[in-house]
Image 1 (cartoon, helix red, strand yellow):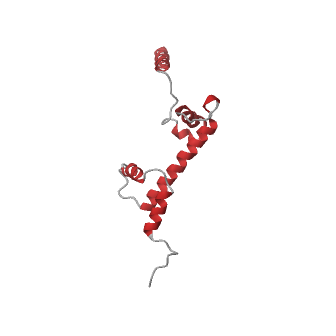
Image 2: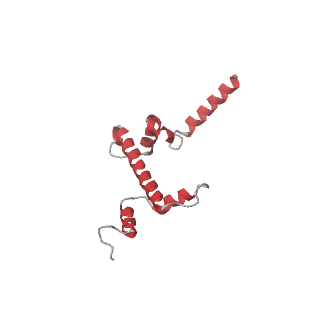
Image 3: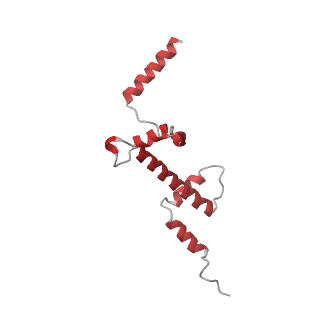
Length: 121
């Protein structure tokens, strides 16, 4: 009995899945395996994690682009991402990973002020 061509075999599905994602699956696998709790990774779970990551990055980029203003309307910069992470509740968990950039002199000044406040107590 021959298999009909109406039901794709596993190799065809894998090939189709690879075409629908842009991120490198091998890199996602490496990141997932870096967790000590992960011993093996199911191919379906790897594909879904990769696709979900890709969709999340697209959503963050689109939200950041839409929130940008002024002369940067045709580009997306780190500051757009940092502002979105800080000001949008959905992305606030990223605020430690995407902090707003500050100048070294401003940082040193704030450190001095904090030390003065601590000395006052």
